[in-house]
Image 1 (cartoon, rainbow, N blue to C red):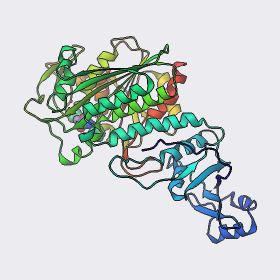
Image 2 (cartoon, rainbow, N blue to C red; image 1 turned 180 degrees about the vertical axis):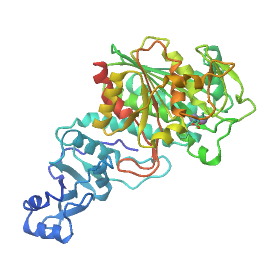
Image 3 (cartoon, rainbow, N blue to C red; image 1 turned 90 degrees about the vertical axis):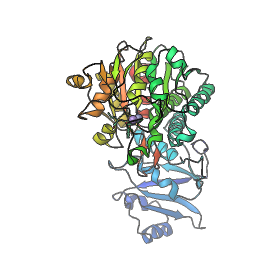
Image 4 (tube, rainbow, N blue to C red; image 1 turned 60 degrees about the horizontal axis):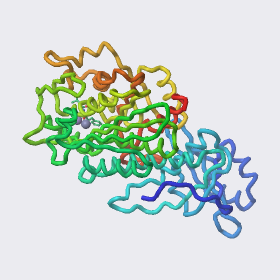
Length: 459
Ligand code: BES
Ligand code: MN
Ligand code: ZN
């Protein structure tokens, strides 16, 4: 997979005109008579999403007319153009400005993504010259982060086990001069990560806690990503339909790594730490069991009422570690609950925070960068739902009410010191092809966070 990048500035690049139904006559007035006849003959009148390729007198492609596809129903709509164009360099001629222009440029790059580890895809050689007025380097950095996220999620569990995930983090760390340390297998018990060990111990591939540090900025941000490389559900085995996509259960890890790639690649002035509990939730004679009571790193005891609620367990130990040092913000990202998917579907990333300023900054940024998020509440009255009779916490409250909220409340119990905690319960998968987003792994909330954070933290 080659990097998603803009074309070099090219004087022979072909202009793309964005045309509306209302603007079509004025636009035609600037074309030659032959071209006007051609465009009318094609039935092009600025219909949204319609395309007309306009030749020169000598029959070469001179310009492209594109019916303005922008609609509240579809983000990155502009990018749908990319694979309908012949090979060449293009530029956007007018119309789009500001955030719309950045969205179009990023969408174009993302439309060039395909997962090619196992099968090559047809080359997409319609390249875009970076529009004036957008930060091209920044957009390429964002696309590179998103590419990393997608590649990690798309890679099947067989080739993306805990050790493979570690190798990917090591490669990333190496690229940006980040430091990394990893605690693996039974050493997790000595080092105080009993939940990571309990969830991961049944798999042939050893569980581990990956810890990466980068940067020297005054503001300290710790990202924690759920790295369940495959989720069978454990002894509470998932049924067929629910297990099919569970290679994506390391989506939270893939997203924090994609975000880290953006932060490090852009040289954001913060101190960054990334923690990933990487495990496989497998079935074996030594699996943890329903009814077990486990003591977490933090000391809180947890009654296991469903071994399929494993994400909150491994995150609990990682969050406890994150909270042991001074930070300005702790963020967790996880494919944590089916309930989140039921509540908001695959397009919206639900997030939780008690910090009003952070929530507002994030929602604003999400709009700017076309990365939709939706706030859900840490609703205190539901705390009783996660408190069982004979332990401190219940990992799978009965009744199934508010499953995403109770999971978020569970995680929050492990963050006490940090002045701000932000949690994303993401889906991480694009179920049907959309512009810039083929079916497969996809980042959610990462671009919004990347945009909001420095502004919010004042760095
Ligand atoms: N990884 C799943 C959640 C998930 C499923 C996310 C499908 C996205 C799509 C998680 O480990 C899980 O199984 N959660 C259970 C929790 C329940 C047993 C309390 C769930 O949501 O059903
Ligand atoms: Mn599960
Ligand atoms: Zn899971």
